[in-house]
Amino acid sequence: MMEIKKRSKPIGKLKEGDKLWINEKEMRVDKHFLFQDHGDTKEMIVEVFNPANEREYQVRYFDDQVESSIEVYELMDEFQYVRREAKMISW
Figure 1 (cartoon, rainbow, N blue to C red):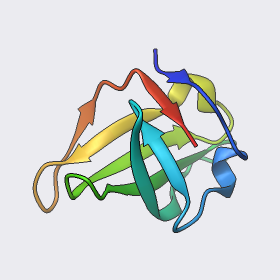
Figure 2: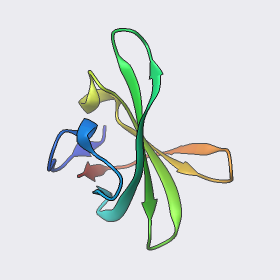
Figure 3: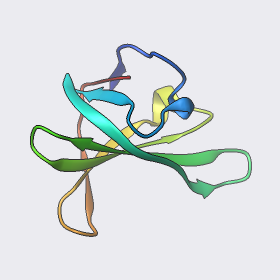
Figure 4: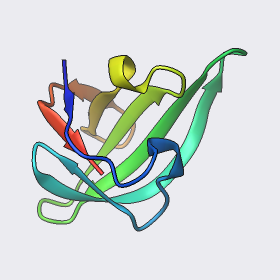
């Protein structure tokens, strides 16, 4: 399970330009949006960019269970995201 190290604000408040760290690597938030509304919960996506290696990632979570649902995906080509095991995340 991924450790959520530090939070500067609720994850739902992250917006374009904010910083987010995955395994201590600094990323920049590009977008934060609703992926799917399941009625009693919302599946959210935070798109982030790593300026050091110019790679794009998604942080996905359910708004009512952030601690247990947060996952990281890396964009491998134009349309395919692959799940990555992250040890730590903070924002």
